[in-house]
Length: 99
Image 1: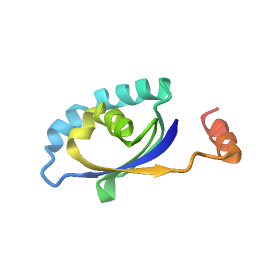
Image 2 (image 1 turned 90 degrees about the horizontal axis):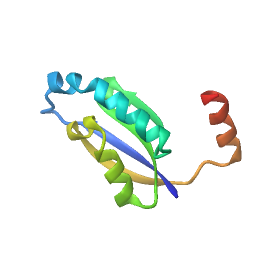
Image 3 (image 1 turned 135 degrees about the horizontal axis):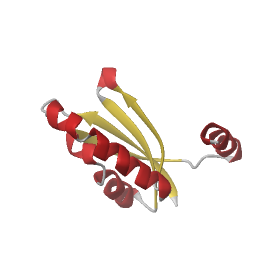
Image 4 (image 1 turned 45 degrees about the vertical axis):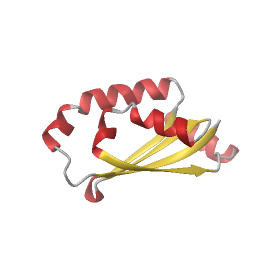
């Protein structure tokens, strides 16, 4: 498995009422993907209308497919970036954080 960082930028024409209505569904799907070990970290930047999601997948196509399962995906233009996997120190740090 490889890791990918998906950077999503909120589309200017996004229906924010619909977006907000899907918030619970988004959180539930994030938890499902976490439990399946398909996603790692997830950050948002409301000020920039952006999201950053670490996806664990075999390839970029599978990473994009995983991202597409998130209800909010329809509101974002996404770019998929392959990344180097975390080293042992980073894995230990994450384990402490997620404890």
